[in-house]
Image (cartoon, rainbow, N blue to C red; front, side):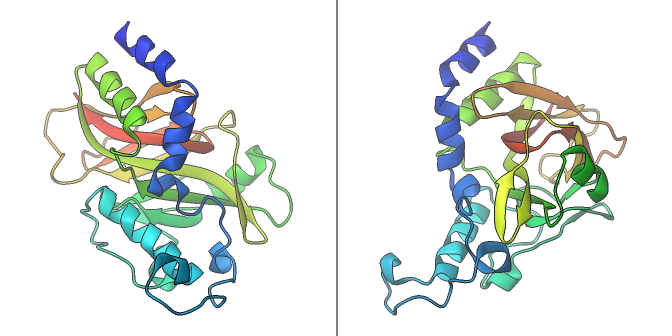
Length: 243
């Protein structure tokens, strides 16, 4: 009953909370570099934020997103666009999808569904490629999402672990757009941080979508160091839980 009340309370408002978080909005208008546009040279000198280059602004947002969730995967900060990881792996499994993999609160992240399977099932056109973004979630700025996650975990007697955001979309001509969250299942594998691992516990992932829809996604692998779950395209706030 309490969970349903929370879902109703955050409907609509949660969309704003998700987008407002630096980990969700850092590249929302994505015009930077090959992945983010080519306007990093159009800048003026100065130390104020209004005088920063486009690349500096991206790096500030990236490093803020990294700092939001701490980190166990070894990425402390990035100093250039080239340092932003475009691939990631978990327990020897490398992601199939190009993207921005900055969820340093996890011990690796990867999409394991085949690239052609995603492109075909979501009807991507010629020149469009699947593209993903993984970030730490800032609980202070995504407090409504955090409230839903906490209540979903409590409903199954669980403990909340690392919280992160995922955007699964497509990219064409340097522009990013989200895929439909009503599409086919996409498998994601994430590494359980050592600080959250615990023998004898069941692990799962809570997913909160814009609008307040919440689901508990079961772990489909037998590796105690990883959680594999099925989600769909679009954006959402996620958290590993154990119970």
